[in-house]
Image: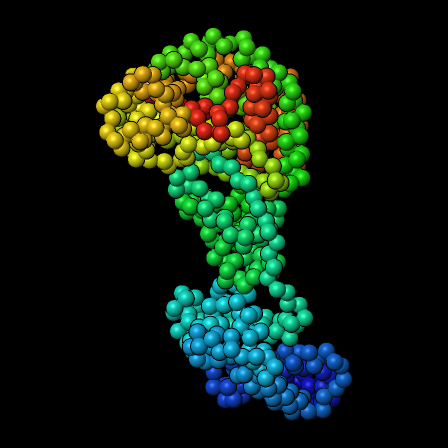
Length: 553
């Protein structure tokens, strides 16, 4: 180094731009000793030493000559240390070494008008809440719980170096944000956001909708709809502490079964939407592709029913006298779905053949609530060894015209009216009923499960054989064979383009759900059309045997 200085003709003078060349290991060691002697803490000594080196590097860019470079270095070191002391004093007023809950309790009682430090302390704690988990944890353990960096490393499983880096980064982030916080602060005001979510499969223990009830959950999902986001990015966008968002994203990604949720966590730590979720405009566009063919669908199905009434009545139901109206209500879902199924087949064969659809017990999709009620549902439950039958399946559909009798997960063994319906398949004498059963039988008649002839009760619900579960729908299945070919081709072409334009790449595998959502208006429209034509009769007040049936073995 002496030779370097001699190049300028004077041992004690040099250009400032060469100042970093003096920072060899020996000098850095002396600077670190200077820092440690004043801080008595290795982490703070490293931080102070880094600040001194940074100041020297910045000074080297200022230009000019130094007559005593080493004296200049130590003068800079002392100045930086003076600033460091001021900052430490400031931090001492910002951070509390007591119990975290005591600190937070005091914060709630303090007012900013008495002392600016209290307000600033509040600001610091609020910013800690916005740090991501690893950084937030390090700050709390170090400043509130009073643990050393070595103790924090042992507790968190991180290296001591990583802990120091987190503390350094967290301090800098808080320091840079606190001064501007008041100007930028906005209250947490979440606009009301509602979804309509549909599901297909077995929801019991598998339904991710259970984790998306609160407004915060819905806001998080909506933000991740088009663009994958980190928890910290979501927190900043919603102005909600990261600690809450981290918990929310974990719940939304896990879902009810720990495997399938409304969000998915990517390898880079960002969260993305894990289900088809249309906004209002997208839902309108999707529906319009289908509804363009509604008149054709309704005319075709009505003509089909007229031509196959006797075929429907020919099926060997176990009922004493099955009614055509009940049979047609049983068929209404497959009738409405016949067009959609053809479109689905074309989409699979011609547009999405190279995309593998996920296999899971339950799948959801939905749209931003637009104030409209689309379609209805179809729920089924099973039981074994019930009322003399080895296996029983009960189904019911529901829509604007039909009230739901039961849902998935319903316990038939504890449903006395339904058990009476099973016992009355071949007739049940009224006189054989207990007083409690008589009351339940009256309820069963009222809700459409039973009807009375003289002193006998009979099952009004359609009853088929469990071994022939598809048999009652064999006639309706013919609608999938050539009745809608031209319209299905055109619809599939338009819908495939819409799906590829609308869904992000990772959700193209959910194209079947997008197709289902697009076809939702068909069901209600077909029901209303058939009622208007006199082919369907809805139950009085919405509750009856219509749309409800049993299969026994």
